[in-house]
Amino acid sequence: EAGVAQSPRYKIIEKRQSVAFWCNPISGHATLYWYQQILGQGPKLLIQFQNNGVVDDSQLPKDRFSAERLKGVDSTLKIQPAKLEDSAVYLCASSLDRTPNYGYTFGSGTRLTVV
Amino acid sequence: AQKVTQAQTEISVVEKEDVTLDCVYETRDTTYYLFWYKQPPSGELVFLIRRNSFDEQNEISGRYSWNFQKSTSSFNFTITASQVVDSAVYFCALSDPNTGGFKTIFGAGTRLFVKA
Image (tube, rainbow over all chains, first blue to last red; front, side, top):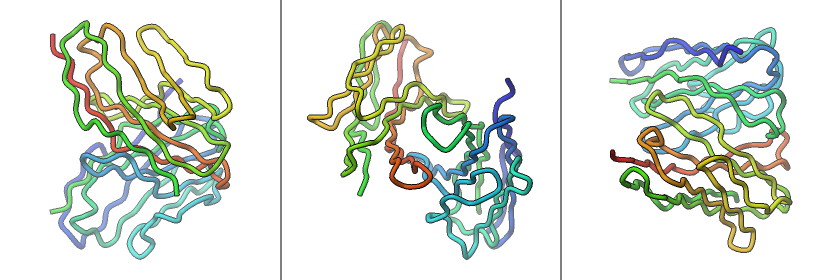
């Protein structure tokens, strides 16, 4: 089975620029997550989708971050405008449903550097 | 509030040594789930195990074993006869089913170095 696909793998932008990340979950996985992992820390949930609806976006900085999952399959996460503190790895994960019975399958992440 | 603490930031062992990674959690819920994930240098988090709060049986999978103790709110992970390929960052995580989305909180991780 193909894993969770993410692109790009790396991105370097200047502060105040915009950036977008893409995620394609495992086929049939209804739940999709975006996590932010700052160097030396554990992943922090930004947003969780169930099909194409948002379940939890309480930790998403909505003044600059947005995410969508049109058609309930792939998803994009956007930052506009980026700040230095947004430098992190952005991980996408998916699971069969929103219970933890199956664990999450994570992608390899997008490493963002804001300079 | 929920919290996961992994007090060991880095551990270094020599191949074939046994090593235990500690995880202490805090939650007021009686029903919850605990996880361990491995993050190798490639960056992808790999799911290792899930435990629910009603199942305190210890589990063994090959060289890996997990000790869940509700009395001390701990869910420790032991690697027996460590190998160089075990070098990675290991994360303990806690999931709360009382939030609609089973929100999962990760600890800060323990970086394990296994030297040949």
